Image 1 (cartoon, rainbow, N blue to C red):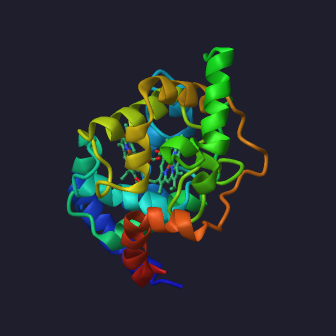
Image 2 (tube, rainbow, N blue to C red):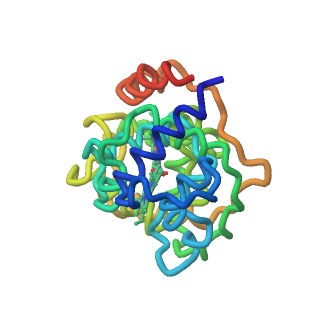
Length: 247
Ligand code: HEC
Ligand code: HEC
């Protein structure tokens, strides 16, 4: 086990400072747990927010740990841009980010109900084709090759694709395509695929994915083919090298 108490103590001070939470003036009767520490995060990432007015906030509970860690570093280091999170995470160390990633990855929250299907029959066929078979003529692999055959992700670095709002999926594809909001190191396996897809294709995929129910026993798979791992080398290595000291 990691020295969790020590880590959360440092986390408390640094996080409070980073978040402008009043530093040492923390109330004495609040238990010093990760659940307390991540309350500012829950304000935006709680399960209610997903289906509330602002469907854009992604669910983070139970996503693969390495993926969450990579994203937190992307926000902190300006490779993925969302100002409130950049401010919250400024100066937070890798070790804290790893702790938060572990916490949210282990957190179980109910998934939202599927969205209403907004794609036409042609779009549904197109989406299913790309998701399950890809497009060999353009060397686009099937989404299931990396995101798992149930589309619930591949631990530890690849997230699931179900239970995400359509608006969020569309926004992510837009960000990858323009490169204006590039996540992680560019190019990487996901940004390359996103750039090959047309807006019509990504809209169809997003509509189809958002309308699928999340399977009961949803869990990421663990095996990634050597070829797909090689494609995603920059993501997998970046996370792997950094994640080691923590676990
Ligand atoms: C003010 C609202 C807000 C707060 C507070 C906030 N987030 Fe976020 N978070 C967002 C939004 C919006 C996005 C999506 C941004 C984007 O896609 O560019 C996001 C994205 C993420 C992601 C990436 C999810 C994915 O699937 O790629 C992670 C991980 C995350 N937040 C963790 C946290 C943690 C941990 C905290 C607390 C330290 C936190 N957030 C605080 C709004 C917030
Ligand atoms: C070669 C492997 C690979 C293939 C094939 C692939 N992806 Fe990905 N995808 C990834 C990786 C790796 C990430 C995590 C990127 C990161 O860390 O920023 C990702 C992330 C995503 C995300 C972000 C999810 C979130 O929670 O923010 C979406 C959406 C996505 N992929 C959709 C797709 C779709 C749709 C397809 C099929 C058209 C696809 N991917 C095919 C590797 C792949």
